[in-house]
Image (cartoon, rainbow, N blue to C red; front, side, top):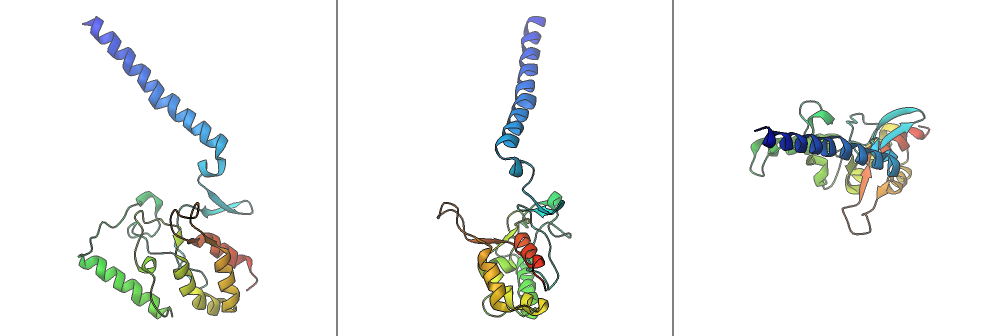
Length: 189
């Protein structure tokens, strides 16, 4: 029996060390060496202070800021420890009521015209830091009015913050809400 047990224990110990310790350490070291900002969480700083991550959305609720898309992370919006979608299907009454409520909230805030889909629906993770350029444009008048800015100046800032498709064809154009709002705070208003 010891002849069968010894090779099994040696094999388990070897693969535990290789796959549980050596490989993760090598990947972490390689990530830190090649992509240090991304490996550390793509942190966004204002001076020496970390104000967020370029990869995780934040809940901006003030009229002075561009709002993100709704979050499905539970009662606390943009809670990274509760990342998940809502798992509500197209026939769900709860989903319909939530989307209707978001559209009504946007209308009451002064958003006119067609409401972009990302303005009323959540992302798959509930943590998406981006909005569509259309949703950003729909919010320009509200933010400009609240901050006392000219809408055209604000539209130019939005245009400067549009990230285009990767390699020209992957994904959709998008605007990082945190970076856009930090650019707003950098203005004298």
